Length: 487
Image 1: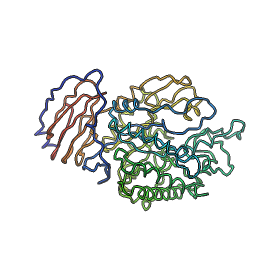
Image 2: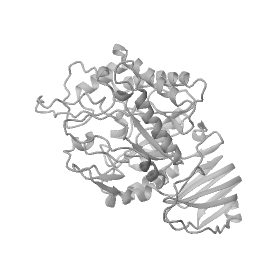
Image 3: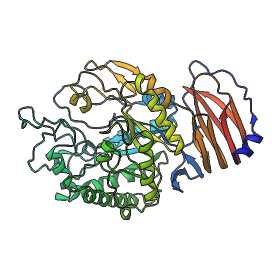
Image 4: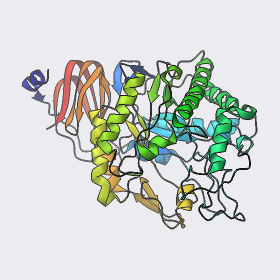
């Protein structure tokens, strides 16, 4: 097929004016149809392969203040989504907080849902899907070590993080001190998670009900790609295989509740993760398949190889993808990484980011960079001494002043690489140079930069290449085997 395409390839010269200095944001020439799953691939209901590539945003999250007096999040507004669109992003993994959705037991906070709805709309207006992520780190904001409490010599005080409301935080009086400064390595956190898995005082049932309420709010919204059931769940007090089983049981309960709540609307994707162990080691015991038989599940591990994994040697970036892809195949599900990045200095590791994007191309998949930005009072810099903003963020700010330091260009470059947002039928090959596929329908592709890309295009009709903020938008109609490559 490739030989045939190359033999018939013609250079299509597209004559258009240079982009204006103040080009408008993408007008929904970017389309956001309802998403589904077919052949282990995220697709839209028009039958196109959709690559969800973007970033995490924590501006609506609820972090512990940890006594710093500094903002814990930066405001998330329409300007942020315009900037994301100008990098070619078409998805935001929006971190939302159980502690704000249900601040008191049984009370669903409609005002917070309105804030979520506003962010979803702002993203939609800029051609960006939203994955609603029930975010937590180290159980919640209420498991930090009080400042007047000392820790044993082999332990360190823990900071409060984000996730569960105070009424759902059952530590059993176990110490909040941790071992080696590791976020998850506190007995109180393990106890709180185990109480959740055991549904002690009906806590798990409450989060299941909260998921149902939230899903009901967006049951008719195609710009909501789907729901990430729980960020990096801690294994609790059980061995890895029992822990994976109890995590799977929660996933089944939450998925069933979401499906019931979507009655009268349509089903959305359900993103599920292995435990937090995967983020640290690059592999872990997996929740059993029997709990994840819904046809729209997506396996979503966090791929931090060569950035924050315990070993810098194994798995490397490429091996991390192999391991994750085999796990996704075991579930017969698409692979999508809900978090990746957190590399160090962009000048030193920009090439690693390029390698990572090469791997997403190889597997024809997407992911969400961690993170768009983080405030000075966020637990990450607090834990690290609050002397500088962690380097993994795409937008840096100075701490503790909060002054914006702007976009990290060494990361933004590879993250804004050209790619097909939506490709009809099957996307057969994808690389830095272009893509090929076979199918019928509208192609939508992104190209960064001010200079018009020179393209070699085969078997696309009605092609338009238009300047938009940050780059170029390609729209064309395919019917059969098609190709778009950089000349």
